[in-house]
Image (cartoon, rainbow, N blue to C red):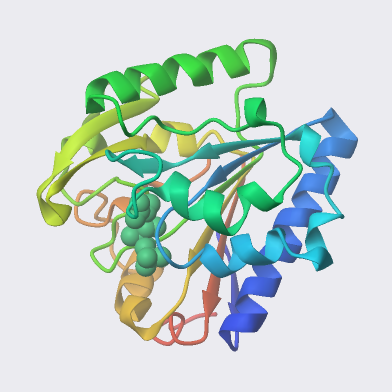
Length: 244
Ligand code: 6PG
């Protein structure tokens, strides 16, 4: 059952997300000695990433024990304005005492299918000696119901079971994307959607309360097998929810 938390403004939204991430990191590092975090792309998490690297929060986490991954990436170089890695690096990563070897970016500069294969190999190597799940996955929600780069009616939605990473040309964004599959996201200990703004309200309502239609609304595919599902919303994005 998803847990829904609504924050009244963007500052409280960003702070609540940051507090949750830090608490999850502290707990995972205490329990298992490391914390694996999958970052979301897009604009919504940027304020969260900025807070995470701020004086108020940065010192609360032992970043040498944090491993960063991405749920998806645009097929562009790592210094490109559209790169999810670049956005997180500029606002957060370069301000953190995190070893380069703890950062697992999707190599958007490679041929898309090569980038997907390379990332899947990296993930399999990382988890070879660990329980197979990410500790925390952050996801956004597109106005069309996509999440990560799992877009409506895309072939990424129907990859063979056991596929962890896939690449696809996405007509809606006129570009190639590499994305983790819903199988991977649903393995996670916790998945937290970060969604803000009135433009997402209708889709939030449909995804959470509407008819199950995972081809049209890929975000509905995110149902962690044994983990927690959390929707962190600002009041604008939650505005169409009937039950909260
Ligand atoms: C991406 C993201 C994508 C994003 C949503 C929401 O690479 O763009 O992975 O799934 O999270 O499109 O984006 P905004 O936060 O910018 O609205």
